Amino acid sequence: MEYQTEQHGDPDRILTSKLEREKADRKRALTTAIVFGVIILLALASLVYGYVQKGIADEKIKSAQATTDSLKLKLEQCAQMARRQQVEAARAAMQAAQAQKKIH
Image (tube, rainbow, N blue to C red; front, side, top):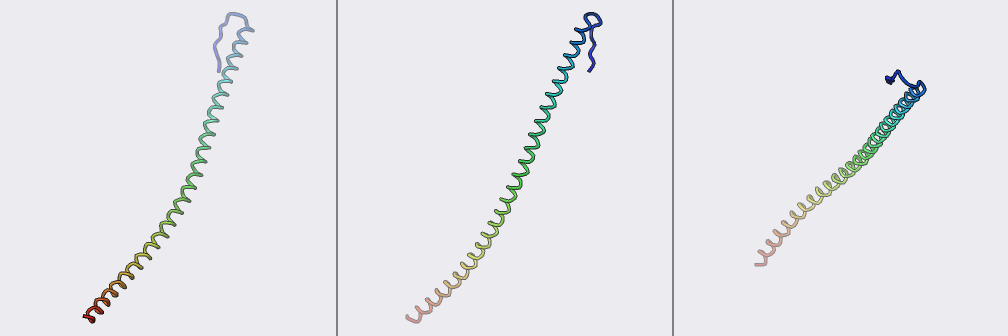
């Protein structure tokens, strides 16, 4: 960046002042670059962390679905068993009623 300097005065002082401003500009540019670099690194770290967490969540979802499917199958089996036992209980009740009729 070029600065306008006074034409009057000590040339060494003008040169020193110009060099100091350029040095300050370079330092400011370096600081800005470092800040943006840190921000980019944090963004990349967040991206990786999010991707890993998504993978973990997907695995947990698969596990939960497998567990749900297993429980649905067991529930279906229990319901079938309950229906069979209900039919058997109804038969036993009919047989008991017929046996009681024969006794009376």
